[in-house]
Length: 111
Image (cartoon, rainbow, N blue to C red; front, side, top):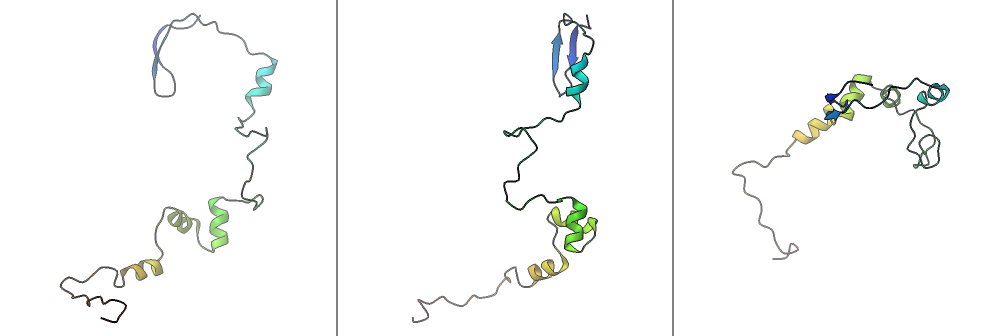
């Protein structure tokens, strides 16, 4: 028999353990099944590639090599950082000038 009382469950909760559970020895099947990774696939194997692109190495280093940049630059790009050219394009006249008069809109340029 094990300990009894309030204990941490291991995933952020506390639960009451009554101490009545029996501790069992491992059997021959434990070694066989404890090394397997859980699969959520409905087909029983690994994950299915639904894109039709085939197996790809989608690691950070592989994407950085494909883009011709360092892994650090690729990490920043993944996080949404802008390149120097993109930042320069956004700076050029993106904000309206205060006090600037906009030209009056006309109906199809006729009136």
